[in-house]
Image (cartoon, rainbow, N blue to C red):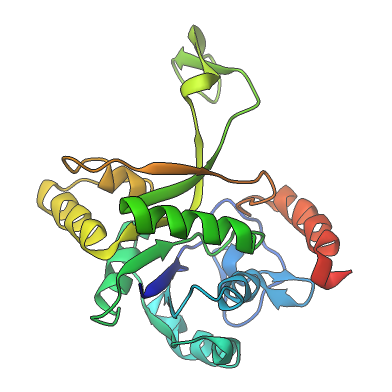
Length: 249
């Protein structure tokens, strides 16, 4: 089955403070996290390299802001040379959902499976990619997730302050969703069509697919190293994980 990977990369990184980045990525006093440098290369580049290294991946589609298309395409040109297929850079949208939908439209017609992965999760390992793709081949829909280790409380009121505990939620039935999230192409396209018709905005692709009848989504156990680099402190952990990767020792 032909597998394409979508990397939505059009976000503005409002939770990341100003830092070192590559290209025209500075905006509103922040650094867009996907372009911040991790040991000399943008985080996006490290993420792309993980999927290029997977023998299961044929194509990669990166969705960026329209003004960034040319320089990102140049940045990633050599990275895509190791793919079985090709690496495309397309215009994203104002939300993750719009970016992924735009990238879906750019896929080759013979694409069977689509994996969507956060551009700022550069530490996904090849075994995780393999396992979630194989599960999606069998079932049509699979995501990566981990079991929470902290006690989870349901509260009322503002979470930033003044919240009151209402109950404790059993962790046995909870999963913290990660990416990749992999779906048969027709399932993912139906999910986006339904969301558009209902004006539904989801937080990830799974939340769109969950709304379809008769579709069950499998969960493949992920890793707590598969972090999403979102806040300034995450960069310290990212540097540590980078040093620990076998290829970088």
